[in-house]
Image 1: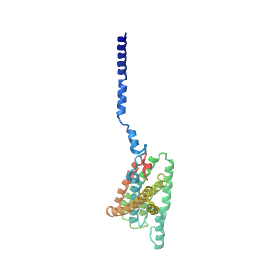
Image 2: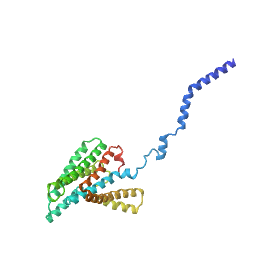
Image 3: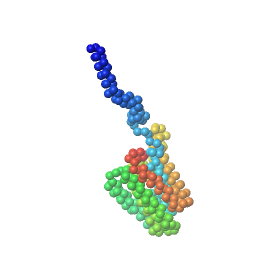
Length: 278
């Protein structure tokens, strides 16, 4: 009887072992494979996102400021001192023209209502949109389209010989509309980003940030200084490059600055784009 009981116990043990063997294998494999999510958490510190690179954080403000400086300079050179980015600059030029008896006074004055009208239309579009990423992409696309129209008009109507001619108003107006759309986006959709065409405020901020950094060299102050420096230098670079390219390529130079705006239009479709730009 003892022998029979021992044989039965062995058979039962072997049967249970065969049944549980696949589960034992799975447990062993799962224990031997490292947890990728855990390793990622440990690598970035309690599941915190990886720090952004300089390009990820500053690509949008740097590219937009570069384009703004170039387009503003090209318009000023070829359209008798017409500012496409600084609408208030046109009021100054209008005052100067009034005193000196220069032509084109009406074009400089008309820039202000055209700018305001463009801002109003753009704001209505923004208010009716329910998808921020797609909306910003469309705003960049609209800017690129009007910059392209600015280029085509310049190529078609040049050379400009009369500061008061309607062709100057049409060409300058297209460039102004493009950057009015940008300004509206900067004050609404991407208001957390520093302005990319208003350099007086950015230059003031650069002086403030430089003072803060020299007095207290913290990482936060260094980051602010890099941000303001990048914007001012980008606008300066855009102005210089825009002027040189215009001398070589005429209004074809504008096309080179349409490309960064189209690039940002594509990038803006990414759900993390708004949170990444500084």
